[in-house]
Image (cartoon, rainbow over all chains, first blue to last red; front, side, top):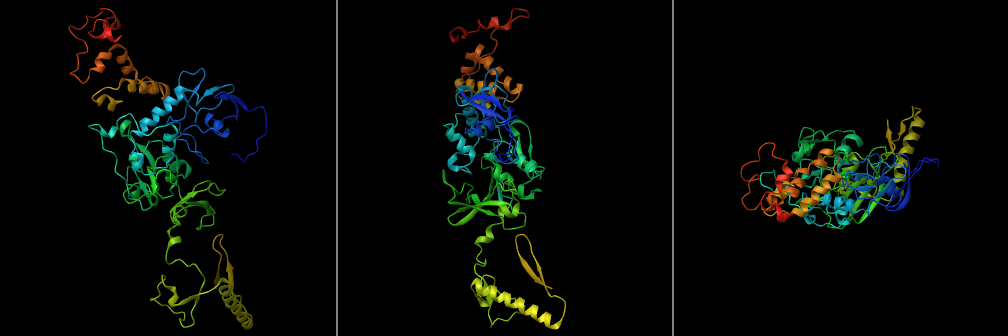
Length: 373
Length: 86
């Protein structure tokens, strides 16, 4: 949106936020206008990412608007001219945000045992000055269902609905952003919950494993299994971040999705989607979860040239983990020269025999190859 | 809110806070009006709520008011304990 050049016209709306006069574009919400002005109002069910729309259901972004009886969710309320909005200066709004967070906190595992201790949920709890809740946990009450057990049926993702706050970002991610429509809400009232297909285990559902829901989840209810320890708690301690984030391009197909490698202790632990022109933060299963080959002991790190004493035959005894029985390491210069010499001899040989061309180049956007026909 | 009622001692202040936030921040009118029974009870029958740990008092002690015998609100003052709560 920001790269679109908008003509400066009288269509900008003036409004007031905490005593500051701001301008909003037509159709812009209070939350968006505040964000452009450098103020981020707490939010859980709204995700600042391309193509997501605000949820309006978590009630963590409530603001007070002069002349209105009730508070309004700033993420869905559009600015109108002359509106006077009170966010951080409204005790009513702050009380409401804090109490909503307290209610959500009462249903969460404590942060020390949280699946994702650095989820945006904990960031906003901290911003609102909350560590624990005055409300008893609903699961502690007699006659209510116990907290749902984790679902580890999927090879790449873990589902921990005890941390779910029903913000429905994953529903939007699955249905609207990736158009897979696997995740939905089922049940009513206190029994409402997130389900895959007809309440199947995630690994048995029609999930294609794009991981968009993992990227969208604000609590750690949906996580890449690589970000969890064996006991289900988060890999990262409270306040810990990965050591490095390396921007890159997905190594698989030719679309060229932009990605961020999350590197911890010199190991890739996760991949997130960058806002590239081809993918707008989306990824598919390969780009998101197919990174373990990078650390495979069988991965080639230098060019190899076949040893003279290991002629090319169908050899079942070849062990890819130990290629030096048949190959020797070489420099790039030597390897390229060797390959070029092979191609040259084919070309010269063909010319001498006046036969049709026998070398055919072909190229893919990501993996240049040549083949001999 | 139900969990708060199940607690041995009623946290009236927290209940009032919760009621206020439900009224102000709910998406629709159903949620906004949902705490009304609680706030009404806290306003007119506070002693009934605060002594819940003891055996519950009958809501209408003695013979029930005869039909047409004035509005309910006016009769509330006759209930034991209401005076000092006000």
